[in-house]
Length: 341
Image (cartoon, rainbow, N blue to C red; front, side, top):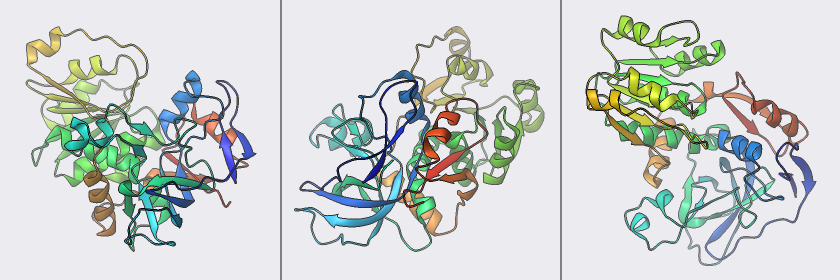
């Protein structure tokens, strides 16, 4: 099969012919229809934090091509699916509680040589992690379920009261998804802070009630002018050093900060502002199976429309150049790969 292969930091992805994967017992083989480029893939490539030969891609959708042994009868070839891209031990505290992404032994698809990802024509997935795509949820939406589930889970971690006023810092794919689901959860004000004009416009299409440019406006003053008070809930979705501290300083009395952005560098905060306001800070790492199911159901019912997040689709020939371009500042939100293109 054709696949995009990572070899070293600073080197472009290489489009190569590699051996086809085969499903082990308890797995299915999926013909990839769409795969998403994730910011974590970009960071791993930049830092060289993957073994040479790794095939990225943990956001995907497609059709089952082969069902492995021991998978039962509920799944058939041709079924349209996505999947939680994780392998877990199945017997730890996290697994017992259904929080599989928090399993100490968790391995994400597309991060190791052992479990190749979906920047390829085919990918395997554990049958226990499959999610069916019903009528009304196409492959474009299906490949975005994973990042949307991250956003949905983050909004759940905030325990939003209906009518709440929230501030979202950053409108990349996760921040855009948070704006979508915060509004869906009943927030009255969803204010998004984002540098890129195109991303601000997209946030408005997804449900943000107001947007601002942090490079040209005072975020605290602008938020107060819109809502009449300081933020009670802030979602930090940028994942850059200094952003947690900024959120702590912006939050109102007894506010809540939910850290969603993945920062792989050392960061520091000054606790005093949070102490003086009795803030709560929580982290939203990933998702549960029920988050995937809820997102799929919301799309199928027409309750949310994530399509504006999808800004481009590329084939393998374009992928290395596009991937490299996304490592820098980019107006794109979610770029999908079509292996057949």
